[in-house]
Structures are given as C-alpha cells and as structure tokens.
Amino acid sequence: MAWPALAHAQSLELRSAYNRFFQLYDQGQYQEAIPFAEKALRLIEQEFGPNHPNTATLLSFLAAIYSDQGHYAEAEPLYKKALTISEKIVGPAHPDLVPILNNLSALYHNQGRYAEAEPLRKSALAIAEKALGAEHPDTARILNNLGAQYRLEGRYAEAEPLLRRSLAITEKALGPKDVHVALALANLGNIFLDQRRYVKAETYYRQSLAIWEEAPGPEQLLMTETLNDLGKIYRVQGKYDEAEALHKRALKIAERDFWSDNPWVAFSLTGLGKLYQAQGDYAQAESLLKSSLVIWEKNNRPDEIAHNVNNLAELYRTQGRYAEAEPLYMRALTIREKAFGSEHPHLTAGLQSYAAFLRETGRIDEAVKMEARAQAIRSKISEVNTQK
Image: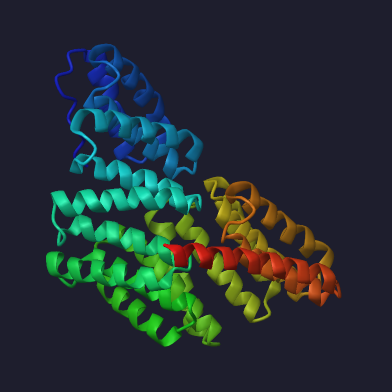
C-alpha cells in the first residue's frame, strides 16, 4: 500500500506515530493501529491546526477502521469531520471529496440508512462526472454503488439502467476481464435473483465467475458472494450437490484469504445451513446457522444479525419447535426496528415470516396484523419511489 504523504511535518514524534499507524493498517492490525492514529491526530492538530489535509486524511483512515469493524457510531463523526475539513480546503465540488462521500454513504448503506446514503452518492456522482468525465472508471463505480443500493430498496427499474451503464463504462475503460466488470455483472445478477428470474441471474453470475477465476488470489475473496448467490439458485432449483460444492468453495476461499470470523465466512455458513435445512439435515443446519450468527454479532451488522436470527426461527418452525421459534422471530423484528425504525423496508421479510408462523400455529388475527403492517411498509416505499 502506498501511504499518503505527511506533508511538511517537522515533529519526529508525529512522523513516527503516523508511519507506525499506516504500517499496522497495511498489515491488518487495526486495533493495534488505533492508538497511533489517535496520537498522530493530536500531534497533527498541534502542528498544523484542525483544518489541514493531513488531519482529514488520518480521520478518514481511522473512520475506515471503525467502519470495517462495524463500529459505525465511532466512524460516522470522523467521516463527517474529514468531509467538512476537505470542503473548506478544496471547495464543495472537488474530486478529492469523492472518496469521503463514497465511504460515508457506504457506512449509511451498511446500516440500511438509504435515505441518507442516496444524496451522498448522487453528490459523488455529480462531482465525478464533471471533474473526471462520464466515461471514467470512478464514475462507473459510483453508478454501480447507487444501483446496488436501489436494488436493496427494491427499486429495480432504477437500479438496472445504472448497473448496465456502469458495466458498459467499465468494460470500455478497463477491458472485459477486469474484476470491476465481474462486480458489475454480479450486481446485475442480484437484481434478477431478487425477482426469481433464475435463468437470467445464473447467466450473469457465470459471466462474473469466469472473470474471477483469472483474478489474483486475494481479489477472489469478492468472488465468494457470487458463488453463494449461485448456490442459492441451485438450492431453490433442487440441485443440491451443485449448491453444496459452490458454498463449500466459497467458504474455503473466505477462510483462506481472510480472518476466520469475517462476513464472507458467515455468508458461506448461512448458505450451507439453508441448503442442509432444505435437505432435512436439521442438526447440521442449526450448527452452521448458529456459527454464522456469532460472526455477524462480532461484526455488529444489525440487518445480518436479524436475518440470521430469523433463519434460525424458520429452521425451528420447520421442525415444529414453535416455543423456540417465536422468541427468535420477535427478536429479529426488534433488532431491525431498533436499528432502522419501524417503517424500514428491511422489516417486511421478517413480518411476513412471522405472519406465516402465526398462521401455522392458528393465530390468524395476529397474522393478519403482521401482514397488514408489512403491506403498509411496501405501499409507503412504492409511493415514495413513484414520487422520485
């Protein structure tokens, strides 16, 4: 990694702390790096003042550490401060702002705070198009991120053209075998997977995987998501052997290339767990889903925690273990409500699955209330999207 230069620093103590931070950061020793970043920040502000490019740079890297570990409350004010400093230095429309805007929008995205992420992504896009050009790879990446966000919101009609434009720009600028092309293809596949258009989704995933197969080892880590998504298609289609091979391959890559409790491992464990559930191997499924949940709890990702709690509830419902299932349905909803609010789109799937449980256990009136609440959220989202 090429570390950003520490411009004009005179203090040897500052240089030492700054360089040591980036050494540890580059080695992935994030917790050990934090005290050096905090010391360097204090010394930078003493030597240069609070509104200096060096301060903004270090704030952004420290925020990235917190964000990568799921400590969003710690990361957010650091990104905001870095953005404010940078705007004062270069103005509100300078391309130097794009990385900070992207990182802050990603932080909101990971928390399901899409309404806050969207204007930041659009600001980054406007700056990139004006400063770098409409056909620049950085412009394509922002289009890709915005399209991926719209897809998660169910705004497929808006997402698809953005992702197709991103794909076209990336292929032209970087060539058809670049890993960013693989990412764009996978994101297009996700749109069709969500809509259960499995044949089309598989086509995009296969094209994406063909590129990943030739990528350097560490970059293949990003391939695991596509392997798991393709495995999901095969599970739904009853192609269990093919699905298992894909999930196991994804798990092997994730465990080889990163730490053992990283999100890519969790995604693979969940895929395998749901596959074994579909095959009736409930004990194996339960073990894997619980292991996945532990990882998500360590990574502090509320939506994924809730999703995996809900997966366990569904597993217990399938086995008729209703007394164990119901508290998990309720816990999943509580997690999402606390993290995202009571009318967020992330709640709809949990409300629907809990309603199905209530119907199965003969509690029809309660089920109807849950279904009505899920429909009210969907209707509100549809109304907002129509206005946009």
